[in-house]
Structure formats: structure tokens, C-alpha cells
Length: 389
Image 1 (cartoon, one colour):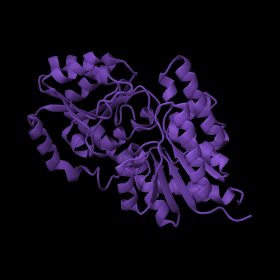
Image 2 (tube, one colour):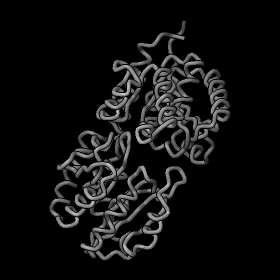
Image 3 (cartoon, rainbow, N blue to C red):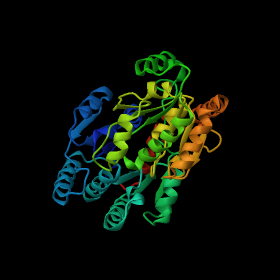
Image 4 (cartoon, helix red, strand yellow):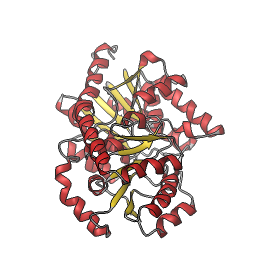
């Protein structure tokens, strides 16, 4: 029997999720781990590997449920893990978690981590809900340890009996962490605020509600648009800036999209590679999601000293301290959403106070380097307690 090798393989379905592990990979390499990152083919995977000095492997993993495609991906992933013989497989997101933990168990990987970043089944119904709930349970069963993205997500996982409490933990206080001193340092974006607002034709004295995320139903976009339409009649100096792409999965309805495109003070920017200038240009940020694991947006916005209006769902309740760093309302409650946003539109002092409190909280509890180090500490601990191979 030999000791567990200090080799880590990350499994993510798509390259969109690489931001989840950026700092973890950097810290792992600095502490002597060999790191391989697996996603579906994407040029961003190659760029990621070159930038950090990590090995990358492109392996097609369909995001939707496709029995043949999933079996082929599982078979290829199993063969890859047999060849690499890692000590740790760290699998992320529902599909990556399922394929990664099953392939790792079959390959005899001693440390198998499933990073539960959200539970899609909570907003589904019928057979699809049952299927997604079952796949979550299978991922948890195949893992030696489950890392939940937030305390509230862990509570929900335990309530649905997806995993035993002793095998389930939250790293520090959860989240992916925020780059407080670099990318989301407010003083770096003073000029960006002025430049973006000027380019969009927004007067300096007007108030901007910002949204960053996919333009889909689960993010509460229809309710946000309806709430803003009502607010805009009372607040002629209010604007709504949406930064994110429309997506075919869980799309917003055609009527909502038409209202976005026709309203003179709703500006849809499409995908943006860097949300920091959007936060800088905004005065308050809205994320009225129906479900989350631990969203990045509220913490990034808080780091930029912006108050956040969000919903009382898993993850969002961890990201926003109600009445201190922002306001929480019920999911899919457009009336309450509009009322909360209206409080900020009319009160600059409240925006300033909650924004500053949010920044202080992120600096204290959610620095990405602290969270990344704590994840690598989990690798060290689990390797030390795992049987050799």
C-alpha cells in the first residue's frame, strides 16, 4: 500500500464554471499539488490552463440529460482517472458532480469531493424533479465528502436526506470568495462608473438598478422587469441595466423580452466579461433569484459598496444580511421586490450605509484567498485520513 498521491482532478461540465476554482487551483499548485482540470471542450479551458500552469483535459459532458452521451462521458472520464491515478477528485455542479464522483469511485480514487453548488430540483416539478433529486443523492453517495456552497444549502440537502450530516460540510462561511483588493476594489472603478453611464446615456444624477446574471426565469428577471416598470412611472430618473445573456434553457417569456427591448430606460448589455464596471455604474444591485447555492453577484456587489436586493432562498440568505447589507424579499414576489428597490431609489444615505456594511462583511468573511486556502486544507485533511492505494 502506498500513500495517497498529491494529485487533484477537478471535474466541471462547462468552462463557464472555471471561475469557481481559479484561486483554489492557484493555491493548490503553490502547496505542491499536481492539478488537472476537466471540462467540455472550450478554448477558455486552454487559456485557463496556460495562465495558471495546470494540466487541462477537454472531455465532452452534455449539460442536459442524455443517457448515451452521459454514458460515453462517464466511460471516458473513468479511463482518464485510471490513467492519472489522482488522490483527490473534486467534482462540481450537478452533472460534473454526478459523472465525476461515479467515475472516481469506479477508478478507486480515495478522496472524492462533491461540491454542491445548488439544487436545481427545488424549482422543478413532476418526473424531472424526481430525476434531479435522485442524481443529487447518487452524487452524494458516491462522494467521500460533500462540500456545500452555503449553510442554507447544507440545511436543504439534509432536509431532503441527500447526504449524512457527518459527511457534509461548508468551507468557512461558504461561497467562492471575492477578490476584495483587486478586481472588486471600489476605488479602482470610479472612472469606469462615469464612463459606462456616459456611454449608455444615463445622466450623472439618475439612479441605476443593476442586474448581473443570465436572463432566465430562475433569476427572477420577469418579476424584476415588472417591478421596474412600476417604479419607472414614479421615478423618471431611474434606470435598469441588465448585464447577461439570454439563454435557451429556462428562457424568459417572449412578452418579458419584448418589454425589456422596448422600455427606454431598461438597457440590456448582453454578456459582459467583467461585471465590476456594471456594479460601479449601479447604485443598487438586484438579484431576485428563485434558487441559488451561494451566488457570487451579491458578494461582488457588496465588495463594490453596493446594497443588494435579493430573495429569501438558499444562498441568497447567506449572501445578504437583511436590513444591514441589503434587503430580502420573497421569491417571485414582484410587489415586495419593487417596494424594496423603491426604498433605495429614494434614500441615498441608506444606499451608502448598507453598501459600506456590505464591503466590511465581505472583507471579514469572504476573501477568496482565505476560502481557497481552506479548500486546500480539506484536501490535506482528507488525504491524511484516507486509506492508501
